[in-house]
Image (cartoon, rainbow, N blue to C red; front, side, top):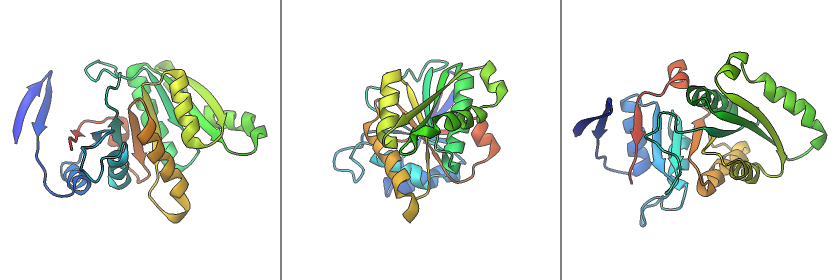
Length: 226
């Protein structure tokens, strides 16, 4: 294991063996990692070579958020505030509530614009009530550090999230990723579809409860190279 200092950050290189997902998740847990960063495209010949597959599987079993970054992403990871235009999908589930918490933290730290997106698949007359519910989720103090917009679209969640992010020129999408169960297959497939097709980084936040420290500040970051 080699360790170097880079702009005040400690960077360590670790080589793991075994199944890529299991090895990465086990190592993350062993060091109490707060954030995992993976590429959107896996290596050819890998079981996870399809775009977004590796990030989806890591996010499904990891206990911390996973950031999936597409090749050629315009985000400048070296910048002090790399994300300035964030879209967060909110369906009022536990996982999306946790995702919103992370999105608000990133938006406030970056003084970014945050768009809360809810997708109505039915009952379009509920737009006003949904808008009020979304606004109620944002603490008043958060508005001092970032701009928050509300967007309500119709259609399938995956298509609406991707279309809204593209239309707004988003440089980060934040979505919840619930544990896979028979009645949550739709939400899991939404995360998978967004991870496959997004043109900007996607932060997936697991449904499992995480610590207050983890929700407020990510300090141990693991970047995986398959």
